[in-house]
Length: 101
Image (cartoon, rainbow, N blue to C red; front, side, top):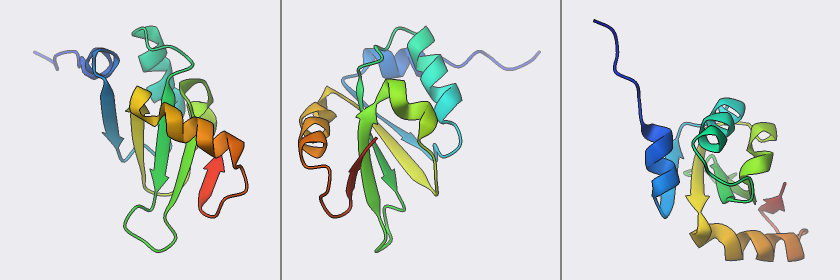
């Protein structure tokens, strides 16, 4: 019988905000699937690495840069809700625990 095709990418494209858990190492495939489903390259993303640890960090970027971002356990947050944080991070690129890609 086989598996039914997943519609996760279509659901993310249709949503205002989405979260993708355990996304480390899947940046290229995730970005490709979302772009193919119609998500714009300029869609803001926040990549939260090691969220529950003291060494937690957040990288703000766009979907276009997602394939180049990877690391430890990550949570990929996506949507216009992160646009302001992305722009602020770009303006203050040296802030503690805040990086832009």
